[in-house]
Length: 299
Image 1 (cartoon, rainbow, N blue to C red):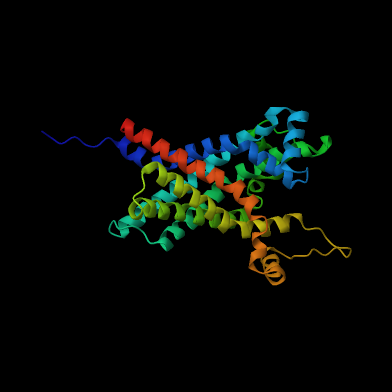
Image 2 (image 1 turned 90 degrees about the horizontal axis):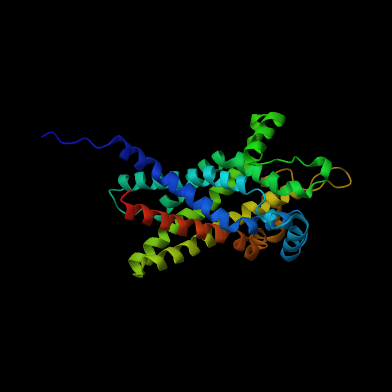
C-alpha cells in the first residue's frame, strides 16, 4: 500500500503558525495595556500627571476614551508583532538547524532579534503612525482635528491626503528603536528560558513568568537611549536666531553623551520600564498559553 502523502495544509500551518501566534499574543496584550498607553501619550503631550490625565479623560470624554485608538493598536500588533515574533522564530529555527540542533549562543539570538525588529518596524510603521495620530487627535483644537473613525480610515486619509509614502513617516528612528528593543526582548527571553529551565530546574509557569520579566527589563534597557534621542529631536524648538539645538539624531546623541555622560540616556528609566515591560510580559505569557492550547488540541 502506497504511503500517504502529508497534507499540504499541515506544511502551510507550520510555516504561518509563529506569525499567527505572535500577532494574537500581541493583540491580547494590547487590549490589557491600552488604557496605560493612552494615558502615557496624553502625559507626553503635556496634559499633566497620570492621575490628572486619567481623571480628566473619564470626566470629559467618558471611560471609552481610555480605549481610543484601540483599533489602530490592534492593527499595529497584527502587523508589527506578527512580523517580528514570527520572523524571529523562523530565523532562530533556521540558525539552530545550521548549528546542528545545538542551542544558539546569545550573540546569534541578538542578531536574530535585531533583524526581526527591523522587519516588524517596517511592516508596522503605517499602523503605528495611525495609532499616534488617533490618540493625539482629541488634544488638538477642534478645527485641526482629523476625526479618524478607525485605523483603516486613518490609513486611507493619510495616503489620500499626504501620499502613500507618508505612511512610513518617521520610519528611520522607529526601525532603529525597534531593532534595539527586540534585540533586548527576544534574545533575553530565549536565553532566560534556557537558564531557568536547564540550570535552575524551574517549572513551566515560573520559567515563563521569570523569563518574561527579564525580557521586559532588557527591552526597556536596550531601547530607552534611542527613545530618549527620538524624544529630544521631536520636541526641540529653534532659538532666537532660528537655529535648532541638534542637526539630527547622531548630533543629539553625541551632545547628550558629552554633556551628561552615558547615564543621561537613561533619564526616566523606571517610568519607561513600567510603560514597556507589562506589554512585553503579557505578550510572552499569552503566547505561551496559545501554544499550550494548540499543543493540547494537536494543531
